[in-house]
Amino acid sequence: MNIFLEDKQPAGSMAPFTLTRHLADIRVGILTIREKWEQLTRLKIFTNENFRDTESIIINAAVIPTLGNFEILLEAAKAKQQPKLTDQFRILEAPWHIFQYNDWALRHDFQLITQGRISQSISSTNQVMAPEQIFIEEGAVVEHCILNASTGPIYIGKDAQMMEGCLVRGPFSLGEGSVLKMGTKIYGATTLGPHCVGGGEIKNSVFFGYSNKAHDGYLGDSVLGEWCNLGAGTSNSNVKNTGSDVRYYSQEGETLTGAGSKAGLLMGDYSRAAINTSFNTGTIVGVCCNIFGAAPSKFVNNFSWGSERYIFEKAISDIANWKRMKGRDLLQEEVEKLNYIYQNH
Image (cartoon, rainbow, N blue to C red):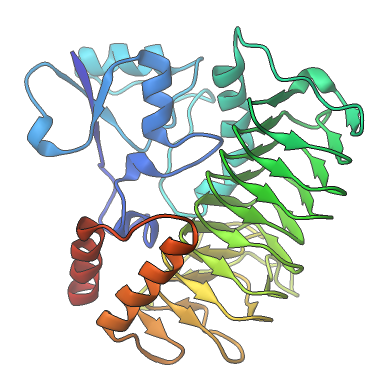
């Protein structure tokens, strides 16, 4: 028996993030949706149609599983029924749901990951509130920091590092091998996935993995995909001066509503911003963009080089350079996927 996670969302509804990954590989909370199902069931999880068979349990990949609801989802799927969606469920139907549901998902993931396990000890150099809500994995280094888990759990992944002077208010997750630079301020349900770098002020935001915001500047109510980089001093707005609801815009110029009054930057994989970039409220940056110059548009199309089109060969070369800095190689399957996006989006 295996689980097949099916993407039933309308095409483009979770762009730019689903241009480069399956919906099940979106990170919300500590884990991706696929990783949650793996932890909860210990079953094989598939998203490729080639592995779908009569034995597969077919589940909507947009529904976020937890210890409290996954059995309901499984039983409904086995009976080929739709589960009754109550307050136990959250469904990813828009890209801003990633940061809006991160608090809820992070608390559930913390319970899932830490149940029955013992944290590494917390160094006495730290100032701590609610230590029972803090879990530190093997190899992580946390010294001379202030950790307030009374507002939500704090999870520090394997071999992660929090440099001196970090101020962290949970819920918060620092992924495997990730680093918080000295004096970083974190609050409002923030997740840094694996091998990220965080710095400055970060509020209620999600980094999928391998992305950097290493310097001063503010990032709030935002999502960064993988292999993104924000230059020193880069900040975003997450609230309009009028206090009214934030509107995003699609590639087709369609107005996207429903994000509420606090909504910031949504940046697709492999995109980067130069130093001192200022992003407007409700900005979407596509895949593989190089942002520089004053006042970026509220919608930046895939493969933008400033106001021009990124030359594909140059884009691939630049991505390879960035990946090498984190000890990774650019894979042929990535090049093929990016070429498809370049030609079709």
